Image (cartoon, rainbow, N blue to C red; front, side):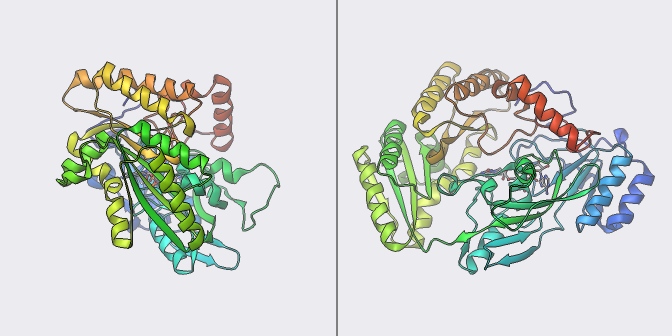
Length: 480
Ligand SMILES: Cc1cc2nc3c(=O)[nH]c(=O)nc-3n(C[C@H](O)[C@H](O)[C@H](O)COP(=O)(O)OP(=O)(O)OC[C@H]3O[C@@H](n4cnc5c(N)ncnc54)[C@H](O)[C@@H]3O)c2cc1C
């Protein structure tokens, strides 16, 4: 995204073993901790563990796969003694390069720590190791009639530890909140090797600073999370799914306003703009997904007890029709529900067909200002001659603005880079934020000073220094 970088960020990954700070003695000591079978040194692994969904990375010098908290702490102590950088890694689906070992060193993959330790139905709690796949935890708790609402679209691959480290959101955030709302306690290993436990099984706890919430969203820069205590809620028994079509984004956003006025909070309220619809229709070769005259669709779900769902679904439908919906479909069964969601689910794949390179921004504005955000995007499209399909979580104002560029077109890439800071300044002026859920990593780092003041950044750096005096945990991330 930003070409200038203090570190060796390479788009075509190369292994840089000649630069490694890892001595054979340290490598042998790490192998003694986790077992030689749980160390990766081959080029293919060093490259694979050196990137994430951003697709721009830096090869690791060594990949270490500990089995438990004690092994994590021993690995950290050995690396700290040799001042070798450590980068924690979940599933590697992050969009901002958070799990990329920018300065080489050890990638500490938590993939062997993937157990659901306990589902405590009485206290509405789940205790998990960090690399439990989010969707698998959801399925497990739902079997007990419980619900873990955070639902990043990556939920079939991403893991709870990565979700906690990024404070992942998703379509259900408007009604149910993001990951932070569900984290009651953590066990974590500090970059100096101590094991700490924050929070616990209780929903009320006001002793000392709230270290749990400080670690949530800290992007692997403050501590390595080794255990997570999560709050669960009862599973909503019934839901209704609707898809409303509109001639343009403005009409769809008017419907969102009407729904708020009708005092309904849908479980999901997703918006897909015309350019994204067109991409999906082309990708799936189904023209009816982007019919002429449809410039935006809303995908909505309401959930709860049956009587309330029926009543709220009717109010939502009416709110859409009053905003000029040209069509409102309501799923009659699970098959139809999946069909209505198809457009939303296929967007990511469809955009890749337009061009393989996108600058994927997850900006967020107060819901009432979404029309201003779309007006700004239209201006950028016209002035900078860019393709910018948008979709996302209209319920909470978190819109994915995808600037599509041809990797071989340097002029187009330059125009995109010019447009990015204008987009970010615009959302900040709208009282929004440059990232609602994907975090900063290294790709958004240059833009942080647009949103945070020098005093705020200095304070955050002092927090980092207090946790990580040697600066070995995930260095080169978050703050320029
Ligand atoms: C197709 C797709 C759809 C997506 N949709 C969404 C979405 O709807 N909402 C959303 O919020 N995000 C979304 N994302 C982004 C991504 O899935 C999330 O940021 C997710 O939380 C990352 O989890 P992960 O396990 O892959 O973490 P990784 O990418 O492995 O790591 C992310 C960060 O967390 C740190 N980390 C990982 N594990 C630990 C640990 N145990 N302790 C300390 N630090 C750790 C890493 O160092 C890194 O900084 C999407 C990504 C893709 C590819």
